[in-house]
Length: 253
Image (tube, rainbow, N blue to C red; front, side, top):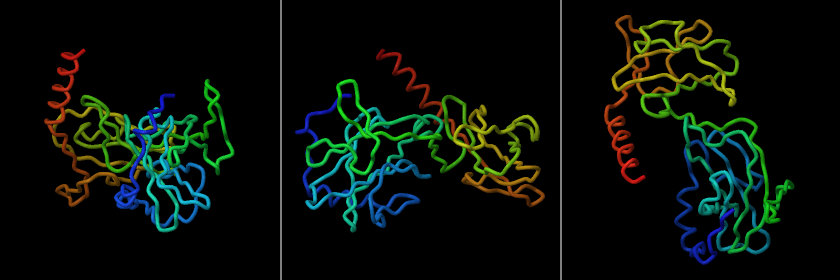
């Protein structure tokens, strides 16, 4: 684990006032957290909370293996005196965290400590105590479909734990109701990866024989029979940007 010098991490108290603006994130109101707890997995990401003791610290940060021990993240304080940070950095296929064990520590006014509310402590190869938690199922961000993987590959997600069969049908597969079945992934979501060259597409899901629009689709249109369809545009610009990025990476290798 690489830890940056503390001098580079010290943050003026006034910065905490600015960070208060980040207390309201999509789908979660961090203002209304009344108490702290060990890291909690939510639909929005991984929530860290910290409750100070008798003395209010100037700042609290969190760092851990969830982002490979990058620069510690500043935690915002709410009206109840609870510091919080929601980790929701989206990786490949929309995965925020994969299913495994993670380690973390808090930096409180320049002093590294384990989580006082988490009884699970493990040690790194240098004997440094670290708080630990495990993610049983991958955390996947589900804000819109499809999620870009790479090139012309995209993945669609559908969340229905009671569904027995989910199919993708549209002009992207000539409306064949059997060619593109979804499969359940480790997160308990239905998913399918499909090749989508730049262009416009209309599609539906078939869930246990019932046609439905994509609940994560951004645009709804109607066919000539006045039935709802999800409309999708894959822009050419994305492909051009990736090609330019690939060329630059070859130049600087």
